[in-house]
Image (tube, rainbow over all chains, first blue to last red; front, top):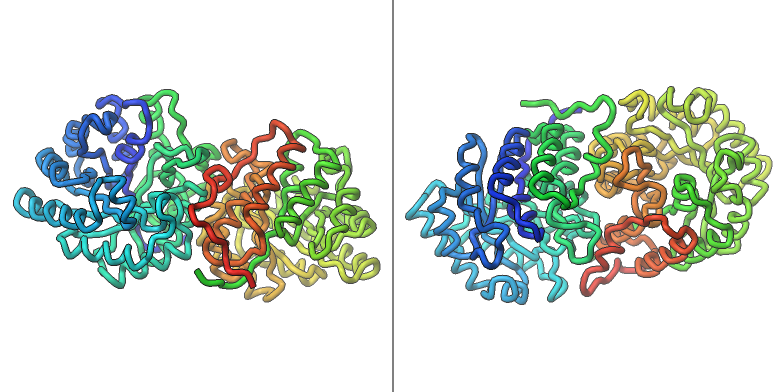
Length: 310
Length: 310
């Protein structure tokens, strides 16, 4: 087993997971969960969304959670911001990285944020200018949503995806990743699109945010890794998407993703046993919520040894 | 979406699936299930095992099921045989292909078939001679079990796997595939081992029999496809392995595997909607048994169109 390049696992459960469950996790429980993730070696955590509390009451305490996250050294604490107002709140709270969802599907953009794609590029521009003024060190990621297909319009033209990512970079985003919002991606498409993305925006090509809706989550992550992607979004316990329910969000399960890469000899920097232990505070904070993950259920293989550490 | 090489999906549910569930499916129900698989375009079906009925009462009617399967044209009807006696029964029943499990792990071989690996190679040789005498057109596959790890001994040396496959070919097997009996494979290992297998035995390198025990089933299939594997074993509804139970067998789910390849533009020859319809007779024959599969649960994407047909 040889080490073949390190990757970054970006834990999105506290944002993408929690926004999809009905129960509200207490601020103290969220903080304990984040502490456990950090103890396992997770190096980037999306701790919440700066959206109006009436829209997502589950994330109303994002500023407080974010401030707690900042007490940890060596971890990037990021937040989702859908617009300039959210970005201002995130920067005021001290967010170290912002992620802005920008949909490649025109009807999805209108349905999701009530803005055209062009208007969202303008929003990215405004957020980048605010960042320049308020906190020049903060990174901005534009996450291209519905990059692999849309539940409203069906197929999304690959040209649209690459055009939109390039527009976001031109507008001041530091990186642009691709999101399989609808769980429609396949490995061939993942390889094509991330290859085109890198050709268009070079090293500013960002994270793969892939879902497991139709069971292809890890295969799609492998495909992305094969063409040079090094950052992968995932959610502990697959929180927020019952993979066996129609229309479920179904984020890739962090534990299975880390197991796959570590088994391959690809260093994630994460201790998988401690990562699995981080399910306990998550479950304690959301009693009754079903957690997924095949590796936690099956256990680690006999004589398991993770990738070589650098 | 372009067509990039056709593959063969070998349905093992009637053997590998049924042997792992406690309920006994009636012969008539098995036949209806097989009819539905054939109607969906499945071109190879492992219909049972020729083992003593007291060991696997679920498969005691394998000869009858096999004879029914033979009424379909254009489908290869195969059976598992652990030894010469089983092979004789299978050939008498008219099996078109035999698969022999040969374990690369010495302690697993003793535990599973009470024979050393060398004795199993002798058994392959005896079966090949019997085949030559009784039915020269019948193909023999040696499936190397525990090729990616063993629950008894842990790691299995890759040299052992390749040596054993080569021995089986020398003994008269027509092809040798690799089985992740224990769900311990990872994509890097799958690529390495199938590449070595092809280097050792060329076009006699056979099927990838991969499990989803730790969620890596489809990623491992993708990895195998990447290095030239064209035959993939899978089980409808993931029958026979609760993926959320420790120690589960967890065959790759046929529906999800077909969805992945068809979405990639790789022709499986299978109509996925008819394949999903084949869950009904399976469920009817095993009421109460849980069927898995993310694609059947989520449904096909909007405006779905399968690979181009040749």
